[in-house]
Length: 277
Image (cartoon, rainbow, N blue to C red; front, side, top):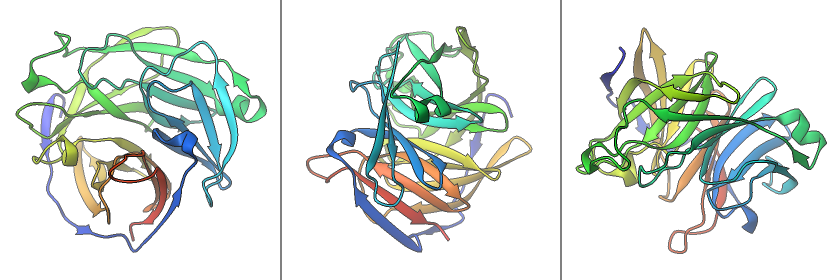
């Protein structure tokens, strides 16, 4: 249903069957995106203000194996990473104050990244068709994003809601990468994640596998199916501890990695391997 609201209900709420965590390098204190590349490699990046670097990690111990510099781009506010075919896509669309007019998607070859320490990139810039003011009124501040995933031949953005009063809705945009183009994205769906606050019910990352969408907030993982234009909540898992989790990758059905940023009061940067079974 285009431009409609899809209200969801909870079917399952539970803790994971198993969860293992590993402290990451200090270099990844602001980790905001991870992606499963193969059985021996994860690829990750930091949040805005850091160098435009990709980090290849050992999935067992989280150690950095390799660093790759991306030429020609800045890390204004990188928030998530997706994979499709030979390419990695990085969402430079963090927009806390809903003021940015330079939102973009960066595309690189992961094969080039494995072979070289410095690589080139392609760029697509974009804007949201439904944003008219920069910033908009507080009640419509829903143009921040921390979730980029690839599903069914499209890239998808799920927004991080910052409305006041908080309405808990994530807007969904679906599009294809267009090199060297400026694209106007139209909202296709809107999902109500929850109604507490952005600290609990705003989307901070996502991934897709086997016809299921996996979204995260700071306090849980949510798993959806999409059927006949409607998202259906299949499961949700509440983490054993609350922290700034902003990265997720799915390695197989209900087996995921989640990573959190460093926070003085909450703790060190970690990566978690979680079973949702």
